[in-house]
Length: 172
Image 1 (cartoon, rainbow, N blue to C red):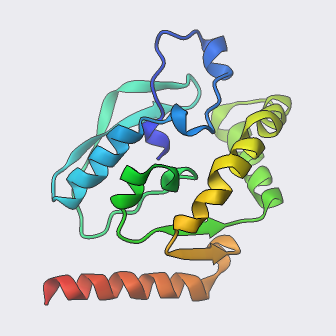
Image 2: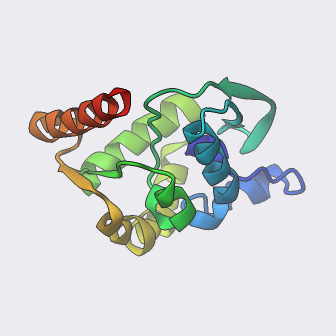
């Protein structure tokens, strides 16, 4: 989902730094829904490439070929009904807040070159409030909620079994 952040070329870098990137309006959800629908019809899409250092889309796009199974991740996937409707199986991975914060700090410092103070300020002012307003309530749309993240092998096995049954039903 991160590839579908809106491009804001008319904003300065300083203005882009202060955009609430954790609000659904930060995403081009219409384009995301169009691409998911096209993939489900067996059509390839040109997925945007987003640069988190500059907060801009790159001019080039990534070719995504259709496949029997398309996996998309993003914390705000279930907020938009068009995106929800394009998903055959909706999974919400529930992870403790402290683990989410530690992962964000590590990622933003290592991959995005952001200082700790900026990361913590963003977490308090936008990330946590948006999580409470949009992300947490959206899990009611999930078909499967996986507690304890990727460490929950029972839930992952259930998910894989469901996908395998759907694929077997297609071919028969």
